[in-house]
Image (cartoon, rainbow, N blue to C red; front, top):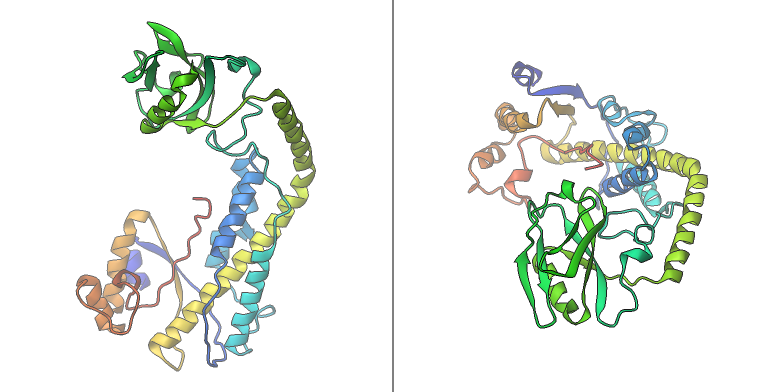
Amino acid sequence: MNNVTSKSNLSHNTKFAIPDFKLLTLTGSFFSPQSLIKRMAQSVVEVMEDSKGKVHENLLANGVDLTSFVTHFEWDMAKYPAKQPLVSVVDTLAKGSVSLSLLGSPFVPLPSRGNLFTRTLSDIVNKEDFVLDSEYLITLLVIVPKYVDRKMVGVRCSVEKVEEEFLLAWLQPTAWSGVTLGHPADRRFSFRLIAEDNEAGLFTVTLFRKVTEDFKVKAKENKFMVREFYYDENEIKREREEMSRLLSDKKQQYGPLLRWLKVNFSEAFIAWIHIKALRVFVESVLRYGLPVNFQAVLLQPQKKSATKRLREVLNSVFRHLDEVAAASILDASVEIPGLQLSNQDYFPYVYFHIDLSLLD
C-alpha cells in the first residue's frame, strides 16, 4: 500500500497500533465523545477570545498536538488493560466518556458574546440614538447583513403609505462608517449606522409609528432583521453593571477555567481515539473473521484534492477482500446484501474517519 500511495504522493501513512483483545460476545454500540470534544474546543475559543491565535496551543492530547498524538498512538494498557474481556474495555471507555459529557463547565458566557443578531446591545446604544417620548415617531434597530451586496434596500415612508425603493446611495459595507441615509426629498425617514461586525451593520431607523409594521414586513422581505428593543435607561444601567461584574468574574475564572478545559479536552480526545481503535478491531473481526490477522494504518491525504484518487487506488489494491463492495463502488445499482449503509459508506477495507477540524 505504501508503494502505490507514495508513488503518486497521495498520502502519508503510519501504522496505527491496536492490541489483540480478548474476544467475548460484544453487544450494544460504542459511545462517541466527538460532539463533546467539539464543544470543549469551542469553549476554549470563547475563553481565549482575546488570544485566539493561541487556541491550538491549548488543544492538546497528553501534552502533544492532536495530529502527533494520533500518528504516534499507543494503547494505554494501564488504563484500559487489553487482557480484560473486550466488553469490559468497552464498558470502561464508555463510562469515562459519559462522565466527561456530564461535566458542566464552570464558565458562564458573557451576554455580550456573539454577533449583532444575538448579543446584548446595552454597551452599544446611547440615549442620543433614539427618538423617545414622541407621539408620532419611533426609532427601530435594524441589522443589515453584509451579504446584501452593493445595495441597501430601504422603505420610503409618508403619512399615507409605505413604498419600497432603492436608496439613491449605493453602499459597500466597508463604506458605512459615519453615514446618515435617507431619501433627499423626505428626511422624515432616516438611517444611521451605530455599530458593525464581520457579519452585519446595526442601523437606527427613525420613522412614523403608524407604518412600523409595514416597515418590518418590507425589512424581512429584504433580508434585514429588526431587533426588538426598547430603550430603558434603568435597564441599560442594570445590564452594564452586570456586564462589569461578569467581566471581573471572568478575569478571576480565566486561569482555572482554561486548565479545566485543557485537562478534560485531553481526556475526552484520548478516549475518543481509543474508541476509534476498538471500532477498527471489532469491525475487522466481524468482516474478516478469526484468527485476527490485519494491520491498521493511518492515512493522511497530502492534500484534499487527492482524496478521490486515493480512494480509487485503495479500492483497486484491496478489491480482492470484498469483490461485491468493490463492484458496488463503481456501480451504484449493485446492492450489498444485509448491509444497511449506503454504498458510499462501505469499502472493501475497514474504514473510519478521524476529523481533527474541531473548530470548523
